[in-house]
Amino acid sequence: MIKNNRTCAHAILVVLLAVFFFACKKENIDNTAPPLINGVTDLTNRGTPLQSVKYGEWIVIKGANLATTFKVEFNTVLVADSMYYADDSTVTVKIPANLPDPINNPITVTTKYGTATYGFKIMQPAPIITGFNPEAGLTGDVVTISGNHFNGVTEVKFDNAVATIVSKSNQELKVNVPAGVTSAFITVTTPVGMATSPIRFGFKYIIYDEKLQTGWSNTSYSATAILNNTTPVKRGTTSISNAYTVGFGGFRLSKAAPAVSLTGYSAIKFSVFGGPGTEGKKARVIINGVSTTAFQIVLKEGAWSTFEIPLSNFNNPTTLTSIEIKEYSGAIVTVYLDDIGIS
Image 1 (tube, one colour):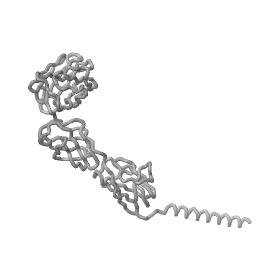
Image 2: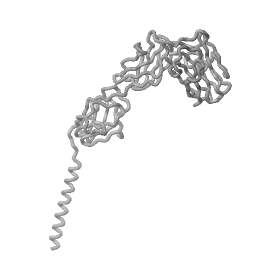
Image 3: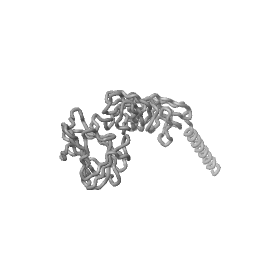
Image 4: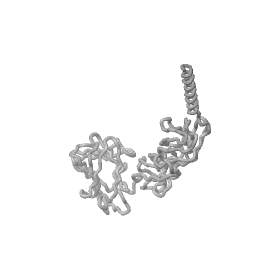
């Protein structure tokens, strides 16, 4: 009886070991077929194939034989291991923030058993212009445009005038000012969109650049203005240093008769550099002495800020006799001004 029990127990053990062996063997078998890619979706609608996506998005690469993926590339850019996860039918991955081409960035997945490449439109975002320097100049001058997503740039214009591109990168363009341009918005066009500068380049009418123009005079009050200051300057070699000697003092430039007609103009434009103690302080821009239509600005210490204020903010005056920047925080501070005019 004991012998029979031992024989039975031995048989059961053999069966269990066999089951365990074959189960483990089955689990350890890799799918050795090469990878296949047949579509791309987003993470929300995994059943709806996409025709294109943008840089920086999360996507799901659909296909087969993907479980052993150890490398994912978009064009020539390798994705960090922490930015993708693979199973046999999908690879979930975050597209890098910048890629070599504005539109055509094929997906390549490499597994232990092969490589698959899938032609797909992964597009950079529309271009962005954050600024340009200098903010005024003459025909042929080189202007540096700063921003992002400039890859594949096809055209730069100053209003309708096409500019010659001197050099280009994803975040910076250098162009020549086209002939005949005095005041214009800058536009940058790429295969995926167009960006327009936040302010205009140049002036249609200058009040102060290197000097105060003929017919204009300094009529400031409770402030001391030096019109040939040499540092800091926004452009050229001189600027205006204005020390408010009393809180709520006014830096003011006035035009002798006749007044400047504002027909064909759309904005007042000027640059301000905040001296010590100006951070967050307020000032009011007043046209023709009419304080009821004043426009408030906030000063920034230690940096130039350019303001382009539409004439509509001043109730659309038809002529210009004075422009005033009135300190409005009750502070005794110094500011520097440059490139004052109308665009």
